[in-house]
Length: 358
Image 1 (cartoon, rainbow, N blue to C red):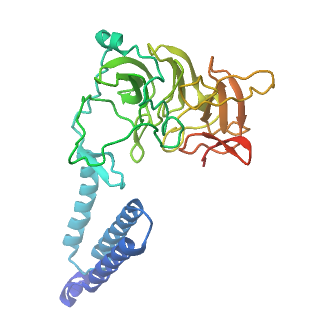
Image 2: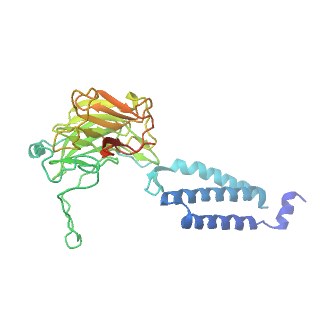
Image 3: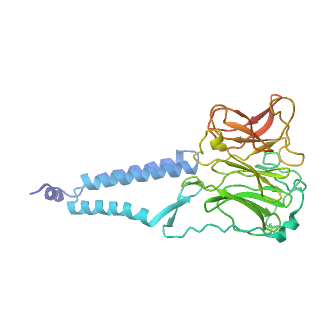
């Protein structure tokens, strides 16, 4: 009598299956009751438990189950086939905010949004001077970078006074917010292999101008497209893309004034989740973004600066460029970039720039 036949006579050994499943269920219950602070942590831990349980069950089937060898070979072949077939049929399009994969068929066509041409009819309507409207929101987190808007009150009961949709516009991929000055609302989008700074008419959604350049950041976990919110200061727009391209554009036309690769310029690297710093403009004209005056370093005159988190070493973690022409002015710190934006304030009587880096 062969060993396989002897094992078959003794019956299938099921108790390891029960132990593995009980331990897995117990681990999942513990995870969702006590583990981690966020659903992301719980989902990742649950996925790990599922993977370990599956591997243990496979090991049981192949080595300890006493199943007939034909069955074990069939199970192994099925697992290998499944592992090969699933990636061939589906792909991970991204993840939800809770880090749950979003799957799609591999043959699904990924169409890039069309670059909508500016409509000249709207250009004449949008000549309002920047900084004059009560609703101006010229940079990340508002006029003072503190998530506060003064002078605007919202209806408290949206059931009795529901907000009315003014327009709807298809946009490219990305995570950028809007900067608003006058009738101009400016954001960043990913359209195919180009990052695009787009200016919309605030009241109609009409595209007033676009500025596109070749750059593409994409990650399964982090998502796709630019992250940072543009900054409007005076008659200029400062926008940083996810790969570290810092652009200075004309607010009226979108024409490029200067551009700087802050990653290459400061011997840094693109952060794991993309470069996410919204530029801080200091010394801007009154009525626009963050009005502050800083010394250029020689003590003889003041000038307007654009401050960004580059994440370079050798005093190039936080850097400032001259807003007029993009010339490097100063740098400080040696830490890699995080995902926050610089904030200017007064601490202990001293003007300081705060940045949360890695």
